[in-house]
Length: 107
Image 1 (cartoon, one colour):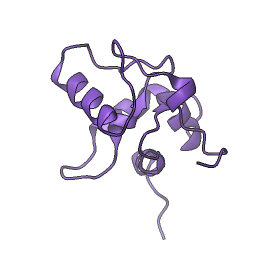
Image 2 (cartoon, one colour; image 1 turned 180 degrees about the vertical axis):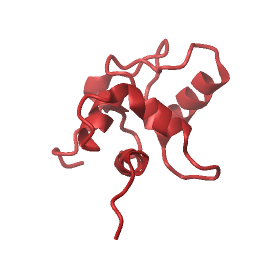
Image 3 (tube, one colour; image 1 turned 120 degrees about the vertical axis):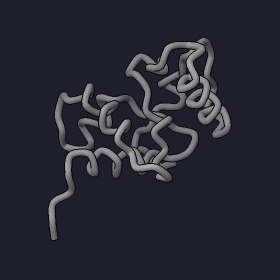
Image 4 (cartoon, one colour; image 1 turned 135 degrees about the vertical axis):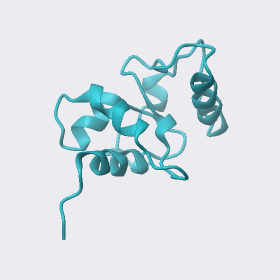
């Protein structure tokens, strides 16, 4: 059996983020065993194959901001997708304390 690629490890972590929760780029990097490679996470998510079901939109900046420029199509898609799952997005920001994913806490 072959070892998953760096991108596949990232996609596995992102796929595990539950609906209604978000994780930061740094958190995803850490959980994928990539240490402090938070900047790489966005690149890996940009390589997702067409037709994938991985919830890329659940990954945001550590301060709760959506990384895309406000008003851009990508921003609108991400904000809408989060809202559809019950995540409040106000001025391009999500309350990490309320919606942040902590896999060590049940629920």
